[in-house]
Structures are given as structure tokens and as C-alpha cells.
Length: 280
Image (cartoon, rainbow, N blue to C red; front, top):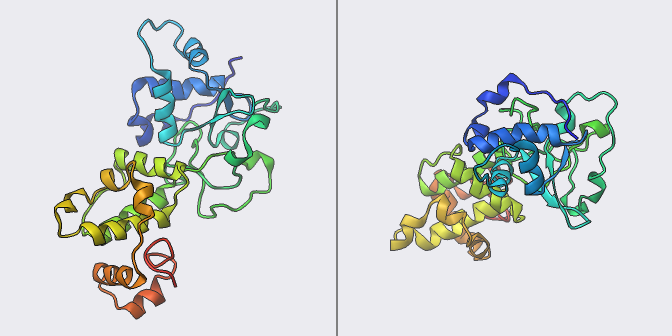
């Protein structure tokens, strides 16, 4: 059943949505009408096409469109306990004012492993940027992981990456490689988001930066020290490569210009960490 929803003016100027195809942007709006009062919707491509593109004769790749919206953190897709495909518009309940909302019949079918509550958000700009329509999936703020007291403020999401985490990853990469890759690159954000979906975290990226720099720098493989290669399908293999703490420390000292003592004192929870560069 279609429902009346709110679209904020900022929606039209959102950079992440602007990077999506026109079909994806239209679907982002259409899903608001399709979603129940808690933001859940049936993600069967045929249903979505019938409700949002009923008169389109051209073939619309709904699967690809949903992946686009998932990659920018607008929605989360999951398989319900009944084996069917469902989705959730992230941050929906926090930014849609609904009088007398009905409980979702889909939410109970969401696997426990896909549930997270609180202020954590997604790939996108958190409180910095918004999707206008609802600030969809972007309101995590600085208290990531902290439980919110009210059910209305909860978000049920899978594991994605925030803008701050992307910036931290790319800043670390640039520090190690002496490069100037942009954290705003759509391709880079998609790759990082995909690895977060696989269960990796910021420290895993830092580890990969250092072990591959140690292996490839000043070799013919140095040209592959870039996000496309490092964050691609072989990421898990790279993450499992080992390097001694002494070698890690040496690389970080060279990259930062700091002494070992300064690094230990100032960056114990940043660059220097069990999975980032060197453990305390």
C-alpha cells in the first residue's frame, strides 16, 4: 500500500544521490511510498518495478538500482527469516513524522546479525551531509555505537562505513604513500563500503596500507599501491599478511617524521594499533 511521505528540499542537492543513476534517484523517492511505517519494504525487483515504474517499457535494472542505493548507504538490503528479500531505508523513523505508526511486519524477520541500534550510521556523510528526504542513513554523529533510549530513535542497519571513517582510512593511506587520494571519490567509497560489509574495519585498512607498502614500495608493483588494488577482491589476503612490529614502526616513523617515542605517546589509538600499524 502506497503511503504519503515527506521529501526535504536538500534531497535534490545531495551529492551521493547525485552520483547515482536517474532510475536510482527516482527509486529512492518511490521506496519512501513503498516502505511501511518503520522504513522496511519488500525488495523483490518485480514488485518495485510494478509500483515505481509501471509504465516504463524500457528495461529497468532494479537489482542494479538497489545496489546503487545500498552502496551510498541510503538503504540496507537483507534476506528475511522467510527467505525473501527485504530492505530498510536507513534513518527512516527518525526523520519521517508519522501519526499513529503501525508496527512493521517485516522487522521481526530481520536476522539478528543484521541488527544494530543507536547512533551508528552509514557510508555517507553522517551529520555532515544529508539525503534531504530524511537525512537517510546519515545521522550517526560522534557517539557511534551508543544506545539511544527511545525506540523511535533506533536504526536497524548492517555494517557500513561513515564519512569520518572513510576520511581516516584515506588520510592514513596518503600519509603512508605520500599521495593525495580523495576520500570523496565515489569509487573509493564503494570499495571501502564493500569491505566493511565483509566485516573489516578501519584498522584492517591501515594494516593493509602498511604491509603492502612494505612489500611493493620501490618495486615494479608500486604502481598498484592505490585504492582500486588495495581495497579490491584480494583485501582479505592482504589483511592476513604479517609484518613485524619493528618494521611497522619503521614505516610509520618515516611517514610521520616522528620518533618511536612520540608515536607511542601521541598515536596509540590512531595510527599505532594492533590492526593499524603496531600494537601498544
